[in-house]
Length: 626
Image (cartoon, rainbow, N blue to C red; front, side):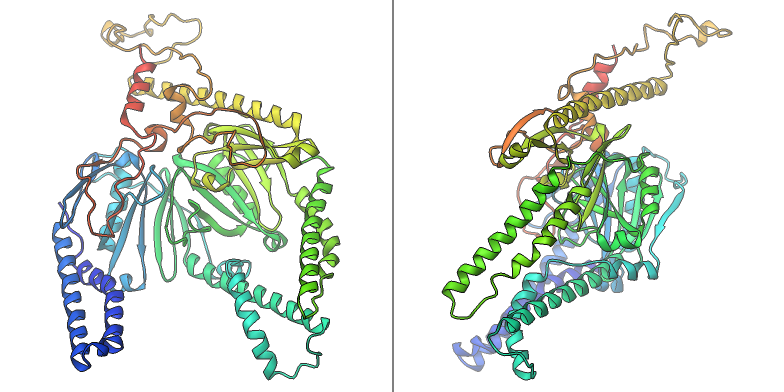
């Protein structure tokens, strides 16, 4: 068994005690004097010392009680100070091994290792902290053992550099990035600071006039845009500094980060969706971003992962020319940008009316406020934006569409943030058709291809929006048919692979399977009585059988008739259930202790084992052999 780095003891102790020491020190030099003057303050200082010693003692005990080991089949972790916890995480179930190091950790030479599994949502196992060399060894060993390697001296797979972000490209990433999470704070700050600034600046605008209100609105808008751009620039530079993407065997490995350095992996066989994302500025200069989504993967809980934090995806390429991004999509999935079928022409009016109604509601609200407030408000200003609403409706209509490629369902939506999603048919869980009360008036529907990725939980599936009702029904049926065909093709490919592994050659058309090859001796013949004969399985309906469960993604199926969805759920075909270990990761983690340890850094042992039971593959293999 291996222990954590000895340097983890002082680092974790300082990390844990910082907030406690600050709170007690504040009490010691403020409120503590009220309980006895100098003696009260001295007692508070003593309490701080006791707390620091207790924390240091706990961290030392945690270090001595934490052990891990890389066995041939599982990663075993033993931990717990007051209650012991033994975990066995099968390698086949581990999807990602991520390494993170902040500035302080890089100075002392330690790193945190997070193991993400198909359970999704939370980190399955965490080693806090080991040396950086040990972290890289764990990452490479887990990858080797996942591939079925047993020889420790076997050569590592070749590394192919796919993308590296240069300083010039990093500057472009920042220049084309906006962080829109700050406008609310900027609005509060601007509404408070503007009168103060105006009192020190001689502005020749009459106070309380319409012109003054207009100047204030424009100034606040410019301030919001400037701060949002500055925040986006800083966030992009900090997140993507030194970005490198390489292909190592059947994995994509990335490295990025300035203050917090990340090293992680993206398994190619766990890809759910590829998304090409851009905005008007990126489109103007010919750039785009590539996002990669895996099943149930939550790279970081702090929202600092590649593309947008907490969505369950990583930016495979933060920014590159559009042709280069589409080239990588073609290399990974064998699909190119198709010709899209857009919504009907009349839908342009629907979008224009929708935006105009929003402006009308804003005008009425300002008019009502103008009637009851003593200060005059320019309530008519939103009406000047009606032409903008008409143009926005036309742009939204133009940038929407869907396409049925040979092996992928492709959708495109959005103008300010346009997203083009590529979903393999065999990853579709279910095809859902919905119509709201407004869509029924326009005789259109929305068709969603639900997958098992974590983005799906927040409405990020591939969606064909506002298409003709008849086309929507036909699209839903086509998606279900192509899903069945894709699952059948993958089952056949797996069956042939199993036959090759057992040394069985598939029978050629018109040839007796019992006939031996010419020139072979009786000793070379295959004994049919001892070798299982593989037969073609009957194709089950979508959503039935464990074989289908191996193909679709992870996660639960989305019900078409969700009572919480506003509008009518027309009809849906149930898709396959959660995929089994052959697609998502195998086995389930073994945890011999149900008690909860007081260590807050130990990750939850309640990660879902959805679709990962070993029984699934074994039973499906037995059904494939008679």
